[in-house]
Image (cartoon, rainbow, N blue to C red; front, top):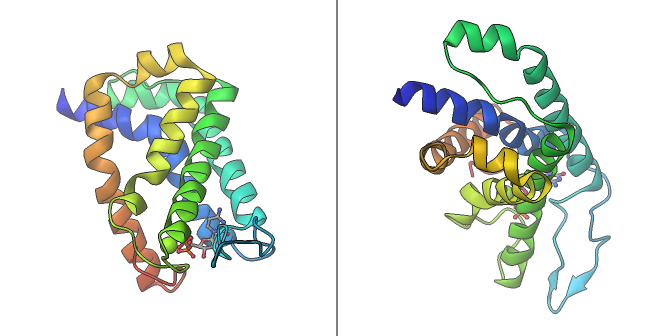
Length: 180
Ligand code: CTP
Ligand code: MG
């Protein structure tokens, strides 16, 4: 029972988990803020690029399509009914994750934190909040059916744990500059 809730939560959030990691691998190139300042700090900073954002969104969306394609066999194998992602929902989850992360950088810069500085709590949850918010806006009915209270509870516990782990691994293998 608990395991099936965890499995559904993981499946539903995968298109939101992958974009930020894809952006780390794809980053570089022109920053979204074009170098613009707001007060004494950059608007967003060099860590938020057009390429990272675009690649992250496309990868997250594509992953949702792959999950849709394997939904039936996966559901049968695990013994739970996984959700399928409508196109707009898939886009909402993937782009929402990127948008949440970008919003967090905006907040970090306003609070005087340089690019790469840690902001515990915000770093781990920014992309979840962005993804859930855009998924709700693009498809409220799908959202309410998929993200029941127990699924949301699992997401709230599972996400920071996964985020911390993947970032430590990314740092250890040298693809990320900081372990957060
Ligand atoms: N990245 C990107 N575009 C994004 C998000 C991330 O290009 N929209 C890439 C950048 O190369 C970035 C790296 O992924 O440096 C790590 O992402 P993140 O930790 O979010 O950025 P930071 O460099 O730590 O900057 P910030 O302090 O603004 O979070
Ligand atoms: Mg960072």
